[in-house]
Length: 456
Figure 1: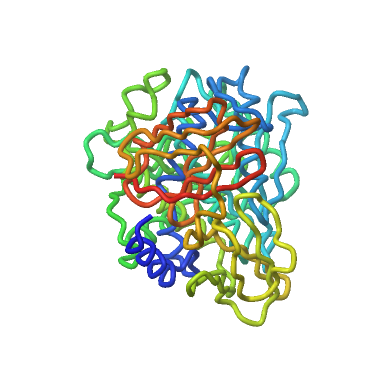
Figure 2 (figure 1 turned 90 degrees about the horizontal axis):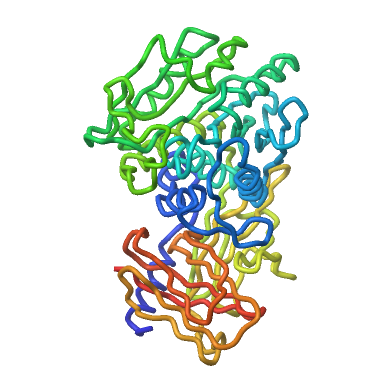
């Protein structure tokens, strides 16, 4: 690494805040890299790790989607402030909704749901509905770091494709329990924009306060602070052919948000294996994910705690004062013993976060990449990572080893690629990543190494 680049990174990190507290800042943290990684893994176009094993999710057809459900459960269970459960449909194994609940600190009985179905009818099915599923996971990743006034439920439905079965089971149970559900935002197919006009649909009918919910989304869309470039088509009466309709049946407030079927600009690969990752319009998808995030964080209600982190040289400092702190290593997923002060100075390169508690509210920063320490402390004899800069394929050459895992982390500390390494020479495709600075995190037989790369 050149000295000039090290100086640039140090200056950049000193100015950069890893997490924001305003709605606008959280909207801008929606990561396209994170969304794309989930899409590639969940559609089977890239291997992933589930239950500790390197696997490929071949498809999510209801009769064969237990692996997909396990993936979702693990993703949500790895986040903070969430209680995750498998809701067995009619109590039957192999038929399950994956539900994560983030309890509100002020109004725990005031419930907002963001949801999508995860089952499919063929291989891939990136738009229908890996796109909605990935958006729910991304929103959960961001909001789980925040303390919120109201309860947010992140729901992923099974058996939508065979009659809206999973959502019907949940909605019926919720109504019987008297759950105070104030709004359900259902996402079903949000990644295709064939004519690049940025049109999207909100499907709504006059059940509960659904019309007002639609108005709230449009208000966020039109707020100049957020700078959205989308164009809304309000469809009333909206379709009943997706999961929101099962909440309408129970009198709940709900809408559907997705690509523009109203203007006949839906994916031409609907319900076929042609619906793959390459057919999606990613700038459009990213923008729509940000809008949905904006609605959910607005309704969640941010509590006044600051989980931002700043850096001075190699020292990380939590911005929130008068709190209790616990620093952790994101790479090893372990708490750092004794690291309980407002500031922490790592002794090795890596990714770090802090848990901040004031009163009953606990928030966790995003992972902060530190790569300004001496690389020689992490050297593994015989290791080669090339070329650097890299355009499409990164080669990782290792000496003899027993077990190795790879993570690619972006400059915000977000994992954008993760896989186990089986061969001494591994070729990692990076063509789907946006250009910029990334960090290669390797864990080889218990030894952890971090190295910066530049994607061109």
